[in-house]
Length: 203
Image 1 (cartoon, rainbow, N blue to C red):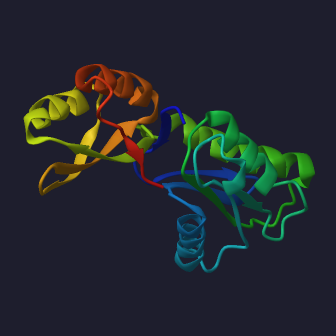
Image 2 (image 1 turned 45 degrees about the horizontal axis):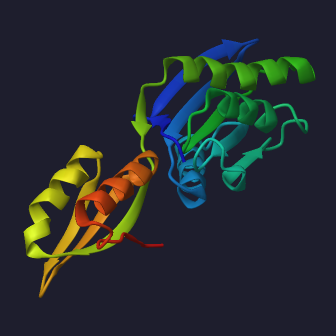
């Protein structure tokens, strides 16, 4: 749950290898549904291409539940797997790579294909603009009006965000905190309220 890089926006890299044109397209895709949608979008934009090979790390870089790849008709293991290996090695999350191949009539052999598909993704990743994503956890917290100002200052100090406030007999806050800051915030909250205030995690 540490911070990790994600693509700042879509990016493409194109090269010609033995008369075949390889276009590598990278995009930010948060979740498998978004990854699938991007692959379909590329297929729609390049209907005449021979192959649309793809790989994705659709969640955090260490989330093995959200990985996928396809050789899309290339010999097994020559396209999707080397592409996925490059994505996983980059430690970028929420990313999908599609390599579009316009066949030029010269066969590259399995080694050549691995180099073309993996290498295209590697080149694109080197130049990819990135942002850092800080995973946040969401909580509710009920405070007295007298405690509100100091609680808001603490949320800010621990790089959190106030998502919602409801003013009733007490103030019901919904707040998000970076994963790495939860322990420190909780300790400060306990000290400040002498143990009276408790964070309640939201799923």
